[in-house]
Image (cartoon, rainbow, N blue to C red; front, side, top):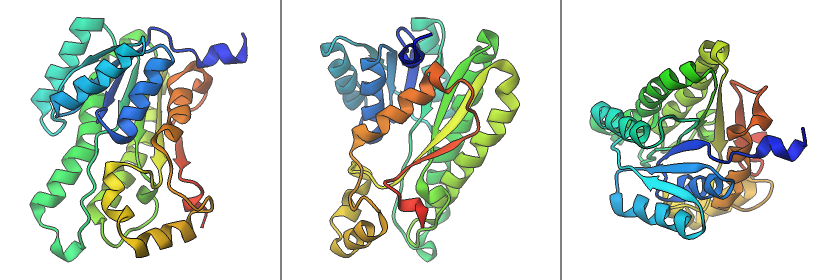
Length: 255
């Protein structure tokens, strides 16, 4: 087989949660360009429709399916809608996430629950439901979006760090459990990218000075720079990889 053939994902059905903006939007557009039928999903209907429309205008295939990932019933309805439309799911990217910046002393239980439910619990619930179909298919690709802060610390984002550490370890556990069914479960751990999530940090001159010192490439990532890794993990090119955490961080985690 030609090596490039292994990267082809024509007509594969891919769900991208948090697909309306930032890294999720970039991955949704990238998978569609590579031939996948993309389900763009998040809470804001207007934004996911905008992303889906852009995919379609560029000749791709996409539908927008709203979901509040903190709502288990909403997740079940989203998956049921996708199954009614396409009949299967081949690729799942668990990208939905929030990152409130607060000192631990200022974090209340509502803040904690909001982050854990959005970042970690949702990935568990969606993966569990989608895996049922993948087990029947005897194949599937699940890609969890973690963070460099799942392995390193931040002094203003304790729940976020903990949730992303959980994502990384959940990836390993699910990879072990579902390997007998031909399901690959891997994790992308981004560093600092130019997205809405980092807008506040990018306005902080001292923080940007620190990041440019800490990142060997001396810059933040562009959203489309995550697409190649997502495509690799979504395709047959990664068939012998599971349980891995890939850092896309410009070298931030080296030291």
